[in-house]
Length: 107
Image 1 (tube, rainbow, N blue to C red):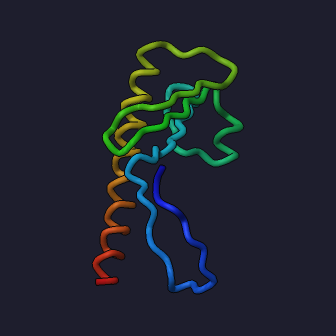
Image 2 (image 1 turned 90 degrees about the vertical axis):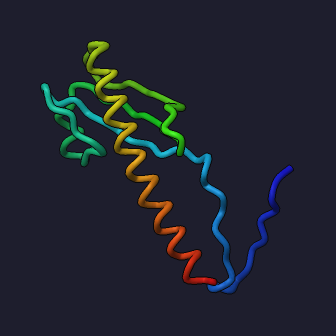
């Protein structure tokens, strides 16, 4: 079935969960002709359309949601997908480096 999770009240008693298959979510807005990644609420108020993309650790897109008032040209969608994949992979590498550094300190 999978690993069992044990709960402890001791804050120093923990282990990392395997997150290798957990996707990272990146939101891109189009404001006019400019793309904004992971926008603030103020930036969202100016959007014409939004694309939310889930990307796994292998760089595969595993979910996409388009929202907003206007349509999107297919070229814009492809550009935004590529940008989201690039951003997600950088985020995943950073998280992996932090987890690896922490694991090295425990040994």
